[in-house]
Length: 293
Image (tube, rainbow, N blue to C red; front, side, top):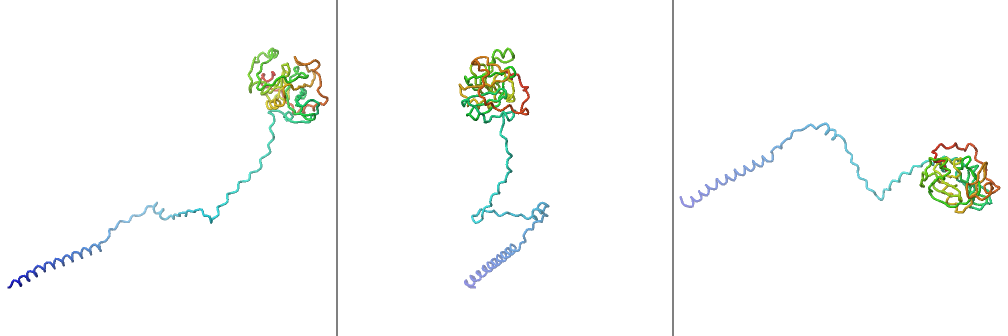
């Protein structure tokens, strides 16, 4: 055999196994692809849902669509305010525990006295501050108890706010339990203001016992409620004339009164009589210190 024939036989011998190898590899790849394509997926076991889950899944859920303000949609008008019924009428305040007749008020009062004069009607427990020849401001007052009333003319010597109190000697003889001195203040028997009459021991002053207005309770001084004495204090000037009208068994001031002044009438035109008895008050049963002025 020639060399050429041997070479061709060798090539044929080597080529056969190569073809076989390629064929085997192709078959193997085909089998692998088939197995991958047709491999069954794993099956998970089915669980029965719980009652809560079943209820939740069976309940429909509604989600509100957000509403945005738009210029094209008009805003809702605010609810009208409720209409409240009219409040009942309120009566004007009156002096504490005092009848209406003793409330401070302007009245018709004919007098020829100079405006600014103070006229005290002890019998009817009124004080008049003359405004003009036809009118006066009237105040309810407390006056001296039986045996301590007086009449005459005096002048306002001085005025004091929240005055101190020093009981006079004759008062201490009658009532030795009284303090010898009490500083001014809300608890002081002289109240918020005091106007001293001439050189006497008498005063026109306030009181912390408004229920004594309209009564004969003092040792000769004239008392008003604290509200009224503050009002009168602003009106009366130092040096103003004070006329105390006479009453039955009236006595003259202990000092400083001019001769013949105790029973002098200031004016023929006198004020109206005392209010009806249904406005009168019973005597106070308060502390003794409220009865010593």
